[in-house]
Amino acid sequence: MSERPRARDLPPPPADCPRPQRCPHCGEPMVRMVIPELASFDSPWIYVCFNDDCGYFRRSGEWMQRQYASSAQYRHKLDPFTGETGPLPVWSADAMRNLIVEEDGE
Ligand SMILES: [Zn+2]
Image 1 (cartoon, rainbow, N blue to C red):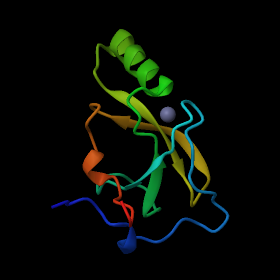
Image 2: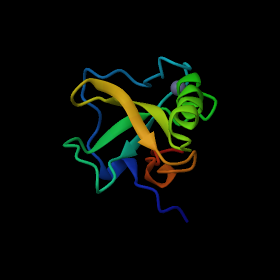
Image 3: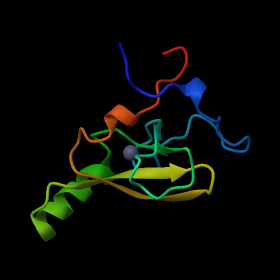
Image 4: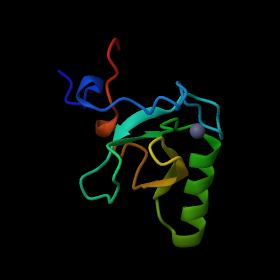
């Protein structure tokens, strides 16, 4: 039993948004993630690179550790509804994986 959000319950990507979206840092396909309740996004979901080997993710972890002795890290995100890209802060490598959308046919 999965409690992840289902693709059919969510609005589709904008028509002009190509799929799959690939992370510009590691080239892996990004996955859809619903927005955590506390975050102030207007969009229903965003694309996020959940590749733990992504160079961006790894470098952000090393940087946070050095600067702040923090285990927080950043993942690359893309909001297809606004076109905005940027860092998504996560408090651990496992954080927010329960928000990854289960695509139909998976
Ligand atoms: Zn990546």
